[in-house]
Length: 459
Ligand code: HEM
Image 1 (cartoon, rainbow, N blue to C red):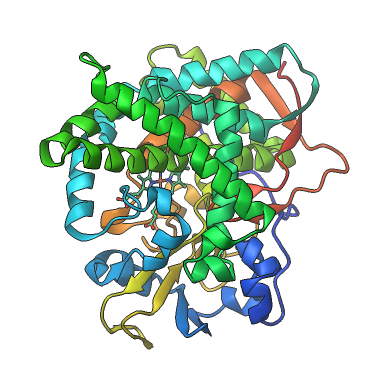
Image 2 (cartoon, rainbow, N blue to C red):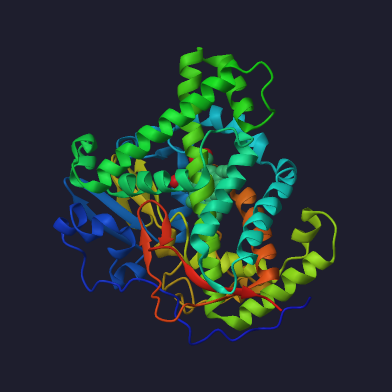
């Protein structure tokens, strides 16, 4: 199917208003800016190559120059480590792949890489399709009506991660887990004063209390799952068994269980929240641009009608890929990447001191005025091959970049594309009159209050 340019001018995707001057320190520590991190940006942040702020004696640089981003994430990556603060904000996952550094990171990454190679991902494709079709069938019985497709996406992506990595034995029901994961992210993303001082446990706020309950709940369930796996003489040959076997070779059983728990939490959260948000934002953009949706749906139907394996269906998708890429540009589900300098460094004209924090924010980088034409508009054709070739490799990084690039990037891309294909082939998605879509973010970027859309059968 050849792709015709579609005019998307005139639609301005939802985004928070930009501040005229930086949020006050009070707001950053206790107020609105501490609760919703995409709201603290000024209009100037989207124009300058870097901005710096010092708060409680800690300097935080945000960098938007792709060359500097390349240096931090790739060329001098050894100097830019996961911040020590991460351990305080997210202790449960701190010893998992996302949180560790140096030799420990290399060893864990080497261990897990084989589960996420393109060849290994082929085995997961039927799981993606199965979960997509189950949700579609539940919706078929209800439409036409308003459905929170955000909740549907969370449910579906949870089923995917649970079946693909844990053989659905993790002892957590998707909808129940989703609530706890959301509470945990809200608590961890709330970089409030007590959390910054490492005293998050004393925080009496409802968000912090809900976060602590979620942490206890997820720890108990996943620890029981791991103990059962360690005792199982013939466990399923999945990610978890592979991880436990490898950890058992180098660590005593208690330590292996602790590291396995950190990674179970890491993969459960990293693997389903982000993918769900990508789905919700993509459906929102398509609902607002019916021509783009019609085109993507026609491609989805044609791809499915061609028959064959899910891998063959994926190969037939061209336009939907651009739509997904543009959605990940406008709404990067992981809106921030944080690092801390181990030694002084120079990033172009920016001098970095040992201990300084560096923020690479896809949220800002992907909408930067010096890097993109009409950065806030929705235009999937930015990702047509000729246009894509003009982009700097480090100006578009929804999955990060360099050695710590998302291990699940190909998994997530195939998952999102197959789910969208099955949903768009069956349904039409339209905005709900009167509902205002709002962006909110703690550690991930998501639609505030879900994503209600009017869903009807596609004729
Ligand atoms: C659309 C979906 C996803 C997005 C946008 C996303 C984004 C990212 C980003 C930006 C990073 C780099 C963070 C940094 O450098 O600080 C990352 C790392 C990671 N992601 Fe994803 N991710 C997605 C899906 C997944 C999935 C499906 C999995 C697992 C099945 C996963 C597991 C991880 C892990 C374990 C890391 C840490 C890797 C390391 O440090 O070596 N992610 N992700």
